Length: 331
Image (tube, rainbow, N blue to C red; front, side, top):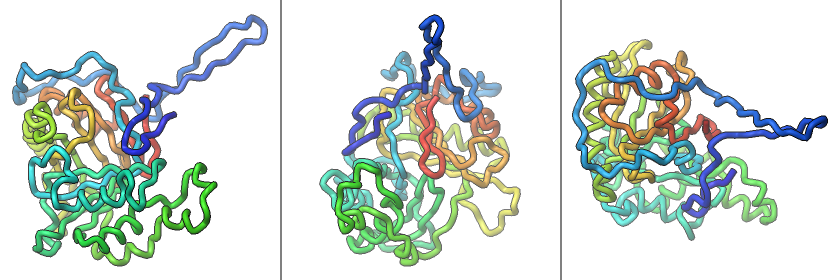
């Protein structure tokens, strides 16, 4: 298995685990394919109702296998910007992403090539409970399924946030050669979490669609189209669009659908990540994030039925996944 190091993917993770056994009598080999740790269907069902039409002239790669076309990561930080698009490099803008990448990116104080943290902008509005200054925002941590409603871009606050929430709790064995003082710099200090108020568990479904038109036209076109389609179809299935509310009862299911910045694989647009919270207990995929590629409006109903309600992964669209705790999912 190859991990994403220093912000680059050195080689795709193998599509499936294959074990070879040698028969002692004949010397013949047999290949045993390990089944995936989740239910799978081969392809997305056809829609049963009308859906939006996607442009036909987009240059989408429809041949290359998608399995494994997801970078290995330990955590995704989803920054609420309230905007639908960003500059090509989100770290070029004066926002939280810039500060985070300064600490975690190549050459950063807390950069760890064995603990990759994805920093992604989102179109979500910051929490209403966050202060109104432009230097404040809100973030989701996934697949930890936690929400921090207010965080400042002040360097001292961002550093405490990284040290309290984002650094690993245990280090990769490759770090054994380091001095203890060096190891302490790279490991998490959970006491610092107390500096951030009203942190909560994420109980809402999150549908994240790459809509980064400032980076690639294909995602800029497909993103808003898919956002509208998901919101409409989820609403028809009885899922309320929006954040959880104190008025919700225990049976209310909520979803937030948003556009996000570059996650790789523009040629596979539309690219969609679905984070199914642990509170969706009857779903086999509860507590996981599922990455899909080549998603078009006609696939949205099937994704909702099969993955969000049925707990099944659609094989021919599956780029990879991650489970709460950091386990990577592959077919």
